[in-house]
Length: 467
Image (cartoon, rainbow, N blue to C red; front, side):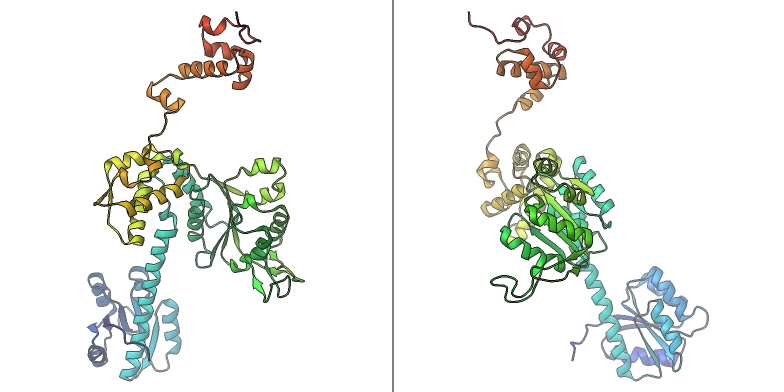
């Protein structure tokens, strides 16, 4: 026996007063909250002002029919379940009602138990659908594009492109520094695609030893090697119908690169030790912090595989290049950490925000997340203070050449002259070498340096000589 459902709000629609009264009494005795109207037009008016979980409606009524009521409800009240009531022998009409959106039907005459059972099924189905929608909304919040913080223009451009291609079957290559959020964006792409109800399988190619990686990806047959005690499907097969996210694809050994290329070309995977392949249907997302074009030039990555992977490229910026996102990300991580560690809630003090924005985050988003979790563990009051952050984050950053140039508000001409002088000093005053280092010709070098006699007095092709 299934557990009894909690009371539901039900509207009975029937021009047969005796039948309507019978249904109201049966449902009320089962502790449901029940109202009744005599026409579909009255039902639509009722639904405009009242919250109802289920409408029990006769299909044959004067004026607007029960089928027409179902059509109108599908447009304006899609969240309300419908139980259709039809006369004995009118199964064809009942089938039409189901096709138009009714959850179930009853044929007259019916016993009280039959009515209660049908109502139970309809209410359970509606509540289950609501729970699925709620969970899907929660997944979207945690894994969809809503989970991607993009206040900065550069990140907004990346997300906009990702949204455009999310439902495409094409392979996507996500590049950017380690910890910049490539997997988070990959999950968002999967969640926005038609494959969202199927698996998202993520594997870090650099974290699995080369000897095991082939078996993990392709699977193996029993007896294929020592220790293969049973057949094991690979990650390609586990991702069937869904998305496979290959992180650190640049670390994939060359022999496996060739096998991956074959899978992408044939949509077929052959487990280790198997005589034949198995068809697979998956969408591939690949990610790397390496510059794959350089890896191709150095012979460490197959050119044909690179072009197969890089149908669409999304380049994620370093966190230092998207400073507008630092505080929103920190607040997101703060909420997550408080819930996970069961501490707080905390807020970020103004000084903490300043410190977070002043740090250059070489570990990118991942480092920021870890720093906030550290601070939540250290916090003593209601606010996170700079003292709660890791010491390396609190340490003042040494001003760089560009920092000082910005503070002094140098013009481009002044910046060129200052930089050219520095390079000139490094090469011992040889202006020809300095121009080569800077990638400019000598006339540009002269223009950058200006007419300063101290800069132009030395021999162009030799360093100054000791006197």
